[in-house]
Structure formats: structure tokens, C-alpha cells
Length: 211
Image 1: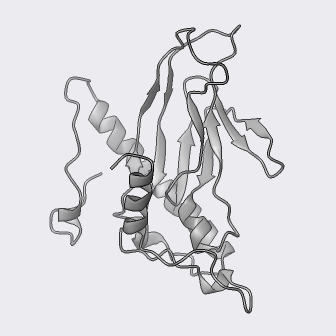
Image 2: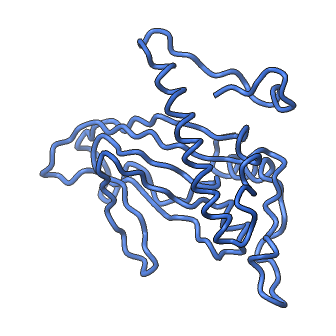
């Protein structure tokens, strides 16, 4: 999804990397991105109402945000992995919410409130929604960032490569992540200092070595 050339944010984003050698790849991914963005906005409207905010509070904050549709390839196991190794270690996402359409094989696990890992397997018509770090800051930790991981297939199972295409819904860089007044009890102080979404994204990307 490109920002219109005459939009104020047009110069903030690099052009998309196109894949002309795979037929229909770019068109399909654009349609998927657009559909997931619309769905994400609907999800955020429900969240806004639950936080006693105007229903459309997030709409223009995410319409041309830093969202990413990221195809991920997990190679097949070689049999030489270290004991206890996983395809993706336990972590939380940086963004507002993540929408996960079904992967090509199982492996996704989510940690519940008791600290147990729960396997997540979706039907073709289902989408998993993870809360990211940004709503956790906005709600003064009323909404908790979802801890998740991707584990290796069991030794006795078939060992295919795994493909997943998460949609990371991000706001525009100048959105404030200061704790919302509606999420603060009388006399309560914010658990984290205020920061802009773009600055927080850059900070986290540097922490994990991606910048």
C-alpha cells in the first residue's frame, strides 16, 4: 500500500519492493494488505469503545501508518538443532495489533495468564489477533502485550518448511503513546514515560538489532 504522492507523509516511506518475476504476487499482496488494514481498523474501533474512546479514535492514526505485511519463511529442520531450540523465540510485537492468517503448518504458541504455552491452530476462515506493546503503553498495562513464539515440529512429525504472513498494524510516527486518561484510575501514575510511536519503534528496532 503506497501513500498518495500528494499526502503529507509521502516522503516518509520508501517505495515498495516489487517482485515482477512471480506472477500476480504484487497484486495479491496489495489486496491482502488493504483487506487486513480495513479489518485492523474495525478491530481498533471495538478496542476504542472498550477503552471509552470515540469509536474512530484510531482511524486516521493508522490509515497511513508504518504497517507491514511480512511474508516469513521458516526453513525445514536440519536435525542438527540445539536441544530446546525454536523457530522463533518468545517475544512481544512492537505495534498496535498483529493479524495472523493461517500459516502453512502449526507451530505458533501463545503464553496465557498462568504462564502456560498454548498451541494456536486456525481454521481457514479464522484470524489470530495479538495485542502489541503500543496498546500496553496506551492503556497503562490494562491490555497486555501478547507473548508468543514459534516452536519446531516434533521429531516424529513431517518436517516441512513453514510460511506465515503476519500483518503488523502500526500507527503514524507522530501518534503519542502516553497513557490514556480513560485508562488511569484516580491517583494512578503512568507505568511508562510518554513517547511518540515513531521514536518507540526506532528504539525497539535498535534494541533487537534491526537498525
